[in-house]
Length: 251
Image (cartoon, rainbow, N blue to C red; front, side, top):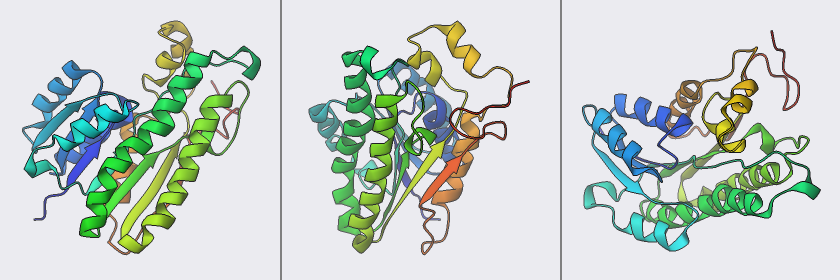
């Protein structure tokens, strides 16, 4: 059996963690990345019974840190077959005129520049071997703009554009590129958006069956396990109760 190696950013929670667990159970070697080292160590210990796991603790928005950590990969982990650009965040929910510039910087630095920094470090190795698979986690905010979502929506529209650009530029190198755009997924996402206000965060998911991180992980695994001639290039995934970014059937 050929062992694949997957590089997952934002692996300490949510979709990244759920994908790491599913990949491990399917014997995919893992490079797990995140800012919370204690969570990475715990996950490494849990998943090592299924596959080989290496961890890297860094902030994707720090260009030099990204390059240094990826360069430090052991020989057995340098050959990355699957890159999951999952790290991302949302800060605040306010009108453009009331927006906090630090929040804007955080979203653009992580959602856009972080994706670029990590991709820039890994893509040359995929080009050299003329194979690889890149999955970019976007959002339904990449397809619609909703009230008070301004900069977050802009950052995810950028991910959508970069996904298309990657597919064009890397086509000649036999590298597949795909984006998955989830709707409401019950993770720590809303707690980050509301800056630790658990009451507000919990309210986001009340009254309907939200998507779970494992649902998206299952889709990611399906996408990356298609035959080599198949590239599922763009998927929008909603919970049944969600019609678009603003219409939800609760209760």
